[in-house]
Image 1: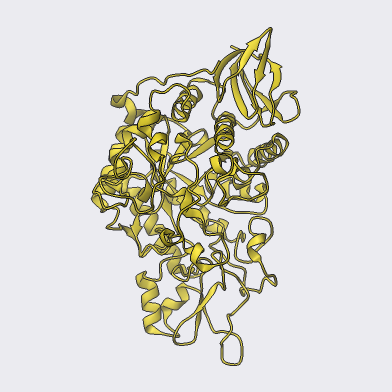
Image 2: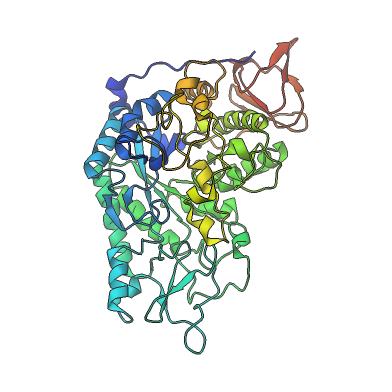
Length: 556
C-alpha cells in the first residue's frame, strides 16, 4: 500500500543557527522557485507581491525546502514580466519596496530559509537610465557603447546589421529614429548590454554587493550564457535559428568570454560569509559545456535543461542522468535536477501528452496520466544525487492552464507571432491556497491571470492532511530526503538490473525504482518501503509496481 511519512515540526528557535553553520548546503539543497506575481497577493490588487511571499514563508518552511528563489521584483515596465529591469537597486511598486524585501530576507533567515534572487545581466529595460540617455544623446553618445548600437546594412542602412533572430521572434535588431540599430536577443524593450565595456562590469559588481549587503544568499543568473557575443557579431547564416538553441554553437550564446566575468563575480561572493551561491541559467549544446560554468572558481550550480526536456522514458532518463553526473564529477559541482519552471509547460501537463512535443504545449492531454507520471517523476528527481528545484504549485500537481483566452495572455512571445510559442502564461496562473474565494486565497481581489474552475480542489487547503494527496507526497518526500543519510549530495548511482522501461538504482542503503512503462512490473522487494508515488503491493519477496510509479526502499 502507499506509504506516507510526516515531517517533524520545525524548531524555529534554532533555524537561523542551522542556516549559518550548515556547510556546502547548496550541494543537496531543494530550492523552491517563487514567481512573485503569482504566489500571494497581500493588498488585493490581483498581483502577487513581496509581502504576500513573506506571509506565506511558514508554508515553505513546513513544506521542507531549503531555499527560495525569487523571480525578478525589480523596478520594471514589465514588458517581459520583470526580466526587463529599469533599476536593479529598487523594488517595483507593484511588488512593494526595499523595506519589504528586507523584511522578507530577515524573516526567511529566522525560519531557516535562504533567499536567492534573480539577476538579469544580459539586457536591461529600454527604460533604464543608460538606454534612455543613449537614445536622447544620439549617435556617438558614450552611453551607446554600453549597448550594441550599429549602423544598418543596405544602401541607406535600412537592413539590420546582421541576420540574428530574437528568441521571441523576428529580427534581433530594432532601428531607432536616427537610423542606428540596437541589438535585443529578446523583446525590443530588452536591449542587450555590451559586456566588453568596462562600465557594465563595474555596475554589476556594484549591484551584486548591494544585494549581498541586504543579506541575500545568492543569485540565479538569467541568460548566463548570453553576456558575451562573438567578435564582429557575425551572421549566423541560418533561418529558424531557434531550432538550434541548446543544440548547436551560436555566436551570441555560450561564448568562452563569459567565464572570466563569473570568475570576477566569484571573488566578490567569496568575500561574504554564509556560503552565498550563484546559479546559472545556461542553455548550452551539451551538458559538458554546462559543466564549464560550475568549475571551482566560477558558479556553484547550473540548471540541467537536458534533464527537464527529457521524455518520461527509462532509457532516455538513464542516459541524461549518466551524462550529467559524468560531466559534473570532474569539476566537483553538484548535479541539479528540475522538472518545471516559469518558462515551460508544467510537467503534469507535458507528461499528459505524447512524447516529442517539446517543453511548451497547448494541449491538456490525459490529466490523470499526467499527474500519475508527474508524481513518479518527482520521487525519481528527489532520489538523484545533487540539488533539486521545485516550481511553485507543482507540489499541488497543478496542470498548465492551456485554455487561456487570447485577450488575457501577457507573454510577449505570444504577440510576436514567431520564436517561442508564447504559451508561458499557462504555468504562471496564480496558485490556489483555499477551496473558495475570489482568487482561491491568492488575495482578496481577483488575479492578474484568470484561474480555472476547479482550481480550489487543487488548493493547499484541499490537500493538507489528505493521505495520498500530491502536497502530502511532496512533504513526505522532502522529510525522508532529509532523514536518509544516503540521499541528497553525491556524484554517482549504482544501477540495478530492471525490466524494460524501469529505472532502478542504489545509493548506499537506499534504493529507488521508477516504472516509466505503461504496465505493471514485478521487481525484487529491496527492503522496507519508505515512500511510493502510487499504490504498490508486496508478497513473497517481490514488489508489484504499477505503471508510472516510483518506489523508495531502504535496506537498513
